Amino acid sequence: MLIDSIPKALAPLNLEKVAPGEYAQTGCHLEVAATPEQMPGVAQAMLKEGCFLESLTAVDTSKAAFTLVYHFANFHELCRTVVHASLPKEAEAPTISHVYPGADWYEREVYDLFGIKFAGHPNLKRLLLPEDADFHPLLKEFPAEAETKAEPEK
Amino acid sequence: MITSGIEEKTFVLNLGPQHPSTHGVLRVLLEMDGEYIVAAEPVIGYGHRAHEHMAENRNYHQFLPNMGRVDYLHALAFNQGYCMAVEKLLGITVPERAEYIRVITNELNRLTSHLLWFGAYLMDLGAFTPFLYCFDDREHILDLLDRITGSRLTYCFFRFGGVPADLDEDFIFGCRAFIKRLRSRWVDYHNLVTKNVIFIHRTKDVGVFTKEQCLLYGITGPNLRGSGIPYDIRKSEPYSAYPEFDFEIPIGENGDIYDRYIVRLREMEQSCRIIEQALDKLPNGPIMAEKVPKRIKPPVGEVYQAVETARGEFGIYIVSQGDVKPYRIKLRVPSFANLSLMVESFKDNLVADVVAILGSIDVVIPEIDR
Image (cartoon, each protein chain N blue to C red):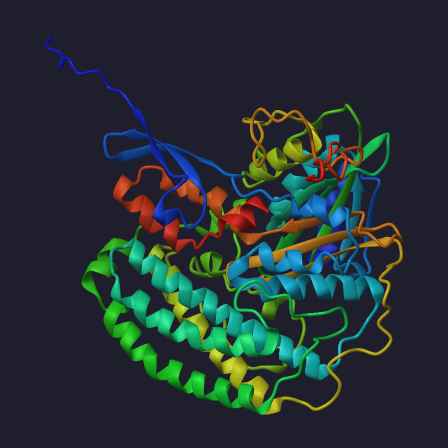
């Protein structure tokens, strides 16, 4: 059972929190809190358990920090693990793309939309927006409407 | 010592962004050594419409129509994923009849998506006739869905707590007649394509996805099942009314293009089975949950909901801070991961196989760009 073996596999990493989640409400069986520096270790442990990286994203939580959110699931057994990692703004997070090559694009997307840099990423450049864009649209400070409105026709 | 006098060099070949076989605006830079591909780099984002940013700036109801425009070929699965996630946040239970209607329309939509892939893919390979066959069939489904949902492609049919319109007798009759007709067509499909020697030679042992690659890249959907892993959210994480139906998950063996083709064709047969059972067992009762608030304001929390689309796992991650607008919505789309592995599988293949591999993973580019 993954719900027992994943906490055992994560135990040597001394994570902040490894607890069963409320599946009926959140869709996740295990909830984990870690620091961004611990993420390569967490990813390696999850890969050893045969889990795949379902999604990797970020949330602009507050003025001081982002939260990196990783979801892991398994092809053979229903057990979804969510890992939250709080990252101070202006700080860099280590990449996990050397563990999961699929994370390469997810990290590029997070860099593109939030401006979070992943240390050790082989090819960290914009993915969805044009290369010469000078903004990161999913930051909460990014305006929702255009600053200049079109003049009404006379 | 005699040297040939020819320097070994690679060159870059540009595919797209306007190319008939990329099914959307995708550009791939191929580094070539003669006719063989050394490296490939896709350039995406031409169709970026900032759906995730839009989500943060409108309320839950206002974001519903966006879901039909992420993956326009299987829009109802995206409708369902979003509605289920919000229902989970609010704690709403959907009535049984509504769940059945969701399953029936969803599976019909899956059929249209697979049929379109079938026709368009074979056209990529140079076979024009199958396209005419499957578009003929697909048209019947579009008419049926149009009758119920009011649109032919970018559906916005599901609501929080149920569905807005009930099935009528004409729909049920038409649906049964269509399934009967589609079943009689499999013979033509297989005679025309599956047994075709040219098709077999172009697809067997080409563009192989190994099980290990699938794990590392997070591949889902028919592309994963073609490699022999029976992972289908409808079975492995049952949702809606799916646990009440008897159906199988077709899988392949080698993970090549041919296996992915067979998996999709057999999946269509399973969809027909699901629709038939759902029509047989269709319960009576309300189609909307009672007490759905007009103003959706979910409590603080977050939710992850996965559903199976025609291309794989669609996951939606919603963070609510107790406001009328979502704080963050992340759309985990299947084609995103599928395309990132495809680039790997291009390596050491002939340039002539690029179109065959690209079409076989069934990417929908607007879904990747979001």
